Length: 175
Image 1: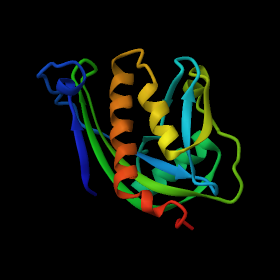
Image 2 (image 1 turned 45 degrees about the vertical axis):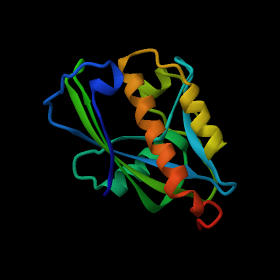
Image 3 (image 1 turned 90 degrees about the horizontal axis):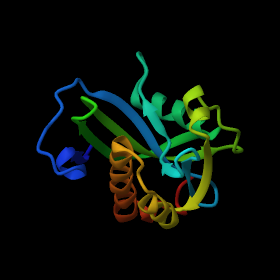
C-alpha cells in the first residue's frame, strides 16, 4: 500500500526527535453510506472529529480489522472497495509509533448502532455522516486538546485530502 505520509514531532511540535518504539499496526476507513456521506466519529468529551479505525488484533489481517472497527464504531457492516494508503506516526512524547492503513468502504445493508468500547463510552463517541468536503472541514476545524489529538487531526487531514484528490471520482460509482 502506498505511504501517504510519515508524521513526526517535527510536523506537530517542531522537535527533531523520533520514537524508536515498535509500530502499532492499525486499520481504518473512509466509510461511505448510500447517500455518499462519510462516517465521522465525534468525541463529545473533546468536541473532536476522527475517522473510524483502530488497532489490528492478534491474528487479524488489515481488512478484517478495518471491518471490525467500522462495525464497532459505526454499527455498520461494510465492503472494502479500495485502498487509500498508509500513514506512519512517530510520537516521541508517548514513545509510540503507528502504521495506519486506510481503505475506502461502503456500508452494506442498513446502518446499525455503534458498539462502543468502555473507552469510547467515556469519550462520548457518536457517529455522524457528512459529505466528504464537509467532513474535511469539520476535521480541520477540530481544535486538538492534547498531543495525541494533534497527530490524529494531522493524519486525518492528510487522508481526507488524499481521498478528495485521488478517489473522489469514485463517489457515486461505488456499489
